[in-house]
Image (cartoon, rainbow, N blue to C red; front, side, top):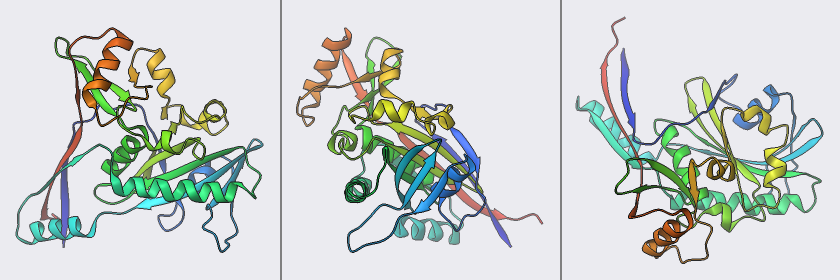
Length: 279
């Protein structure tokens, strides 16, 4: 019998998270977590249209939830298995930036939430995204980068690096009428780490921030407006074409009084090797 030994290093700055135990890996992650917090969680009826998955009610607040689970890419799994079979170390470096496949997931979820919301009384709407498998943590970072169009910003003469929201086109802006926020989660063994991402372009973002659901994300709340107010992040709230990165950087210099600004994208590097189990 053989086991696995993992070594992982993230080049992304860490922040507070909320980690909970999963009772059953075979059923909905969103439903389990929301139920642990005391919400009633009911599946929504299916129809000829693509609809959302859940209606949660907590302290009178009605939350529409569309849940998506992202597994490892089969080609990546095959490459990893081949490296293990050859007795080699399998390494990977994944960019924690906008991901087209994840953007497609967001687009479909926004459509489902829009469809369901027309006939289902509700107060708030979110997409719940869970990354699963070896690259689950990287997927949840990519999901957040896809929502926020984010990167890291620094001045050449200073070592401080800060998050910049909407430096690139972000799906939160694109679907601001349909997504009040999102949960970014990843599974690690029998636990799940969750973050609640607020969409500052949604007309309901403050209602989500002040909701009974957000209270359970005290150590995992992503609030760009609060981050900017605290001097911990930048927001590129401009109509400049995001393909012109130099112009966006110039906008940030003017808005925040910065000089010689650069951006840097983060990656997550990992390595794994298969070793004998000592038992």
